[in-house]
Image (cartoon, rainbow, N blue to C red; front, side):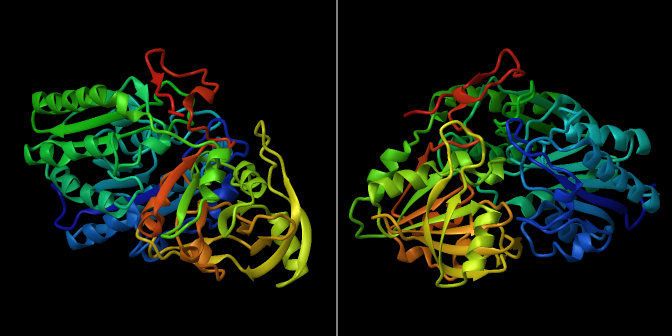
Length: 499
């Protein structure tokens, strides 16, 4: 019999793995603060995420309101990169299992996961975590999971979890809401209700910059989910993370209903919609030279935003490629703001020069990407900061970014007028606060360049006259034909990016 106040263990373990990345995620990367908090233990999982747009925060709030007793174990995330090391994965899985053992008995588990974690030994990191949990807790304990919209979902993961909820927006404005959606379903599972589940995988890849959910195809795909819910089916869609080289790398959907027929019909309907929308999944990108021409046009309205989509650290990019910077400098672009460049050495040199000082450095360009190289120039130090950046936008509001020692610089030895922000810890440039925290107001610039694929849109589109994805070199190609895939399922094809 279920307790009047069911005990629910909660934990989070997030990583989005770029199989073509240059650096791996070890235990230190999960323990340190970056875009998200440092590793949290016990009650910190609730107190240090309260009010944040995170699934675990949304679940905790809704679960407490529903009268559940929460047993928080651990929450951690590392900035997207290449594979998670076996040492880190085993250590964190061990902490979660140890915490579950200390909390036992519990009536259910909620997990805040990503869905695109690849470790040195496991292609399906989340599936392996669930296997270990099931081996310990048994097959009957209800387990509810939240996943990222970019998850590459395996059949094993669907089989091992009783319910999976997935973000429905990109930028991910509904992360906390996704955690909340798990609470009523878990209540039904605890009461003994049964849900039939159906899983479908699609046969083509959608470039990440085309997964933006306020435009086709994402807008059309996600519009069907509320209608299915009105018909009694809980369904969710994952658009997939294209920088994983695995058989499960692809979009997918899950559907839950009281009958197997209803779940299957809903999943088939979503799959047919994917098939109809394939031709609309190719979105254009500019070359750096084309982007520079746009930046040089006279500006009479709001800024133009150029998105350096292939050097997005939020997709495992190095955040230090210089292709767009070089093109803008060569074109003599004026009143340009760029960020965030990850270059601890340049940040340290700026600190040594001091505010108002001048120094020469070879900025960035250490990714090893073909066609990329350091940008050597003289810079003026406009401002220095400690890199503690409180987010102001809707997506990460309530959180604090750790950028490390940070500098605002201005290029001084070219006809171009370019200001840029250099950090010591990789962070995706997706919030106005990444500039304002160090004294730069994006709205006063004619052109803003962000190293981000789509998350920036929530904060920057409202102040932009136009937004253009730019295909400068990076370790996260959005032109999927440039990925040296070796392990995709034979039936899966890549949608090309339009020129």
